[in-house]
Image (cartoon, rainbow, N blue to C red; front, side, top):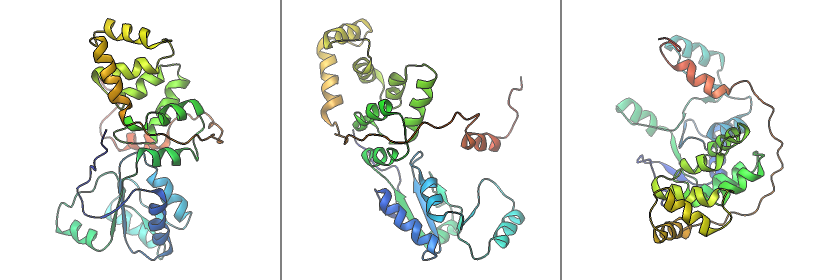
Length: 253
């Protein structure tokens, strides 16, 4: 399955975390006056920037008034200012175009294997890691959040394999992938019978879809994870920040 670019902007396109880190480190040193880092969600862009800038940078997050922005910038004179790390960048007018022209727009488009290898540096569940690693070719849009979502489902006792696959596939192809991933079936003959019984089609349809699913398989290297599982948290801080931006009232009838 192709992983075509979803970004039409002109910029510096990079596909490895090492390349991104070189740009971010140069920005943290002050070599680059303006860096715009654009990439899909779940790639760990913010993590990379935080590690490179440590406590040296001023972070502007969420909405702020012009006066509030002025105050923050005044208090953090002569420090790098981190403000533009985004999943989407639109050149809507001349002012935005002028801003972009004065800086460096870096478009981060890693492969699923690149994201998988970086995830190995901090992820902890070997079963989930190996499961996704064997199906990297199915990921239309690689994201570290696939691993975290699977972990949450597994902790809740929910069929995480089927639901992880549903983030990548649909229709009869999804059914075939789910049957092949399920520990309930011991043979292809059993999976074929379940496929037919579920209304997926004939035996030939099952094997044709199975062949397509495995045609572009990527062999991920075997990696033994070393990170321990995290302590249970009351709520995700990033999710709380998103909810705080919502307007309106929750729970109103």
